[in-house]
Length: 518
Image (tube, rainbow, N blue to C red; front, side, top):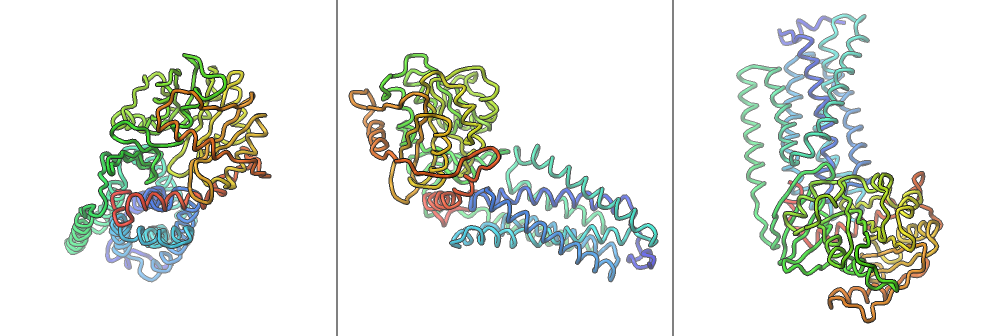
């Protein structure tokens, strides 16, 4: 193997500098991969298709990058080439959010969501990850001076790169995502790569064209980021990054909405009219049962959202506790939706963990846990529903909200699973047919008798109750039992998720989606 000293553009990079290079680029690979879903999620969701597409593109880009980097290093084993790769990767990473703005609204027009998310992942992330993949083999070539040391050099490079990826994954999940937005994180990652390129190839000419290219990209980011919303009266009131998704509060035509990754979780008019029909129906259950709830009865709501359901149940005289996995959702609910539950009645923990740990019994347990359009499937297995049953009082009622279609496979599977746990199950849909609608499933150890006649309810709430009761579903006869071992409800809901996201894009305005992610 020839000596690299002469071929390395008359410069010899110390091993520690080369190892620092693969450490940083290894971290950047994981930052880009983990953050990739944050750009894709408002358009394609954050389900199995999005993750599968992004992981597949990452692996393909790295594999081809390894092969390309190895061949390039053998032909041109020079440090300046190595840091040109870092420069190109940094510029592409810095540009990714800008490229996503016009690309993703066009890609969601593709009828097959899987093709759309795969093409989007390829265009946005393949070039940068390909360039980063080429750096590892290049560093191995520059560090190897004798054939006998190839194994030890390769081992050190892979180890340091993997440690960088490990710390990049932890830092992204624990620090960056909960505290910074998508644009800031991609800007940080791209700037880190640009700084690495300049330090590694510290020459006036290189620094000059690096600054020119960076300024050009930044100017494009600034100009494309300031396009106003012109066709739809949507006002972004607050945007907060969270570990569980991008949280936003918007207002459109006097209606406030809490969005998670672009999907509305609750809709509330400024005049405090509770506009979500399923909330009106579920909140009425303590009144329309044959045995009405007594003052002080306890209700547990798993999934806080904007807090409308817990507050309405509390207004009806129940002692309400809420479980929410994301504390930032609670903060936004208090700030924008007048959530007034005492802090000690809100538990920021996973719903299933809470059910396992609590020793309390409840007359009502309501499962209303969504992350964007993704349902919390681990709360809907036969094991989880059994755990919920043990926390119900004798005659207690379990209610589950599900956004789906009336005869959907997910509804049928959940209905069948409930029937395996409870002797009495009833299901109601706001609208019939193949349109997206609210479905509420009720389960109890006692008969479920509902009658709104003579009950004191607001006109709007009574109308919603009567619509749900008129839409009672028959047994849908599913053979699928949802369990911790086998729970295909997310797959069964893939078309539902697409319909839901299309409905949200139509509500927000497809020409004005730039602000969704950034």
